[in-house]
Image 1 (cartoon, helix red, strand yellow):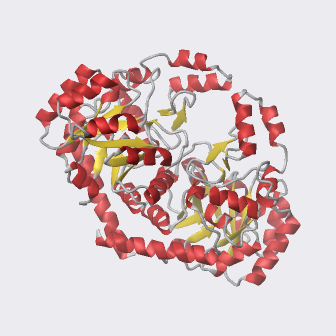
Image 2 (tube, rainbow over the protein chains, first blue to last red):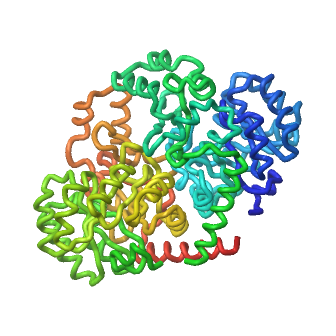
Image 3 (cartoon, rainbow over the protein chains, first blue to last red):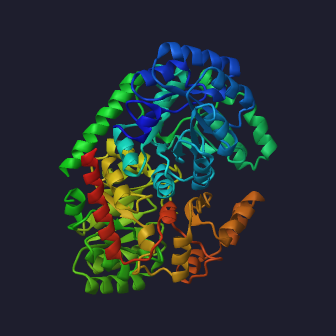
Length: 313
Length: 313
């Protein structure tokens, strides 16, 4: 599996674990990195102090490369980036914002920079800003997502036609076969979220993990498009939200219902009726809580088997 | 490429041309069948008499198998089915409705029946109704689409886990690589719409074809969800529609704007500002008007090359 992505990060398999809020702490990131993938800490739900603690613990737990995902809309962005530089993190994935703002500043410190995009325009912008790789995140992905609603099998070849830096596909990938499908379309790596969200080492609450395991076909939906579009499980909170939409609620009424800390409540505190439960469409295909090592071994095994099957065609 | 789908239809390649309204007349269907795929007439925009004419012309233009796509919400459904039986069409794809209603009646006449679904529940229902194959149509597909918004790379493996009849993937497929990606995920055939919509033999208006060729990343959107969700190009009519939504238009105001014959106006008469322009997300990846034969040869060639590339991995 050696390619530009394994070379860039110095990892064994081109499998990246998404740096998800409330899910991706040091336990998950180090377990993924130890298993030969690239683990990412999710700074989006961490204060600068908490992030520093996770970086230090992650360094103790693995001698392999790991990184941090930073949503650029984050309020403490300057302090977060200071912590990353001070603690000598070598890899940063930026998301939800303009790649021009931070890429040069991070690269000047010797940091490998990857930006997450959902459309071609931002992919070109990212490449021009000097990123080392791009994550192409499709509509089927969990959590925050793009307004174009382009799905992975369209987005990856669209970017591949115009972009020269390596592309990491995200959204809808959970198995060796789905990884191979994305590699055929031009990706050189995959970023997997939902499956790691329910890994043994995920810091999400057990109640949230159970809801994800129970999710079936059609049980997620991309909503709150007036704010930042987000894919959620259809729980009680979601239904309350849909009722507001049916009654033509104003933006401020929606904002009031949303309130603060909904995702923490649902994903970290396990109050699954009231909280926001971010997860991808592939939740319907995920039925087991296993270790990150098992997830990666399973994906690599199925990937190699699927290639052998093609040879027989 | 011999498999259950090529056997079922007695065709060379498991490539089916979607039976699209205003696009899929006898010229397109016969050209696709002559090139080794399966051509489908789109009955959704034909009166029973017009359909009969197209069936007769298609029979003259090819001695290969072809079929008819019938949206089951069609008002003249009984007469349409009578024409199909009288003219001894051997293959029917039903869509947009309940598979229980027509499957047995058609199968009793010796007709091969395929139903188009966008979720697992209807796939199971179709299989129980006795269909010979299922089209799994993802969110990225053009025209009418499912409410679950499940994308092809999630829908195909979801069905594959629970369905034993062969699955034909649809939505987001335009190339040999995207076909191979779907086959790896469990499909045994692909249904391609958008690329054939701009084929030389497509009966769509040249103005519509030009709009499709010019479409870029993010230029389609799934809308009109209060009625039947439909993926459209973002033309002037679409923008007018979005304005209505922004102003919280009622269902009847939307219905009034929509009026009648919008898709005919846009796709067949070529009044591209005022009409509905149905097309899939892959329109951004389609840049040429070529013959159906060239499309199929190109896909088969790229498919075989992509397999060889995997062998080298």
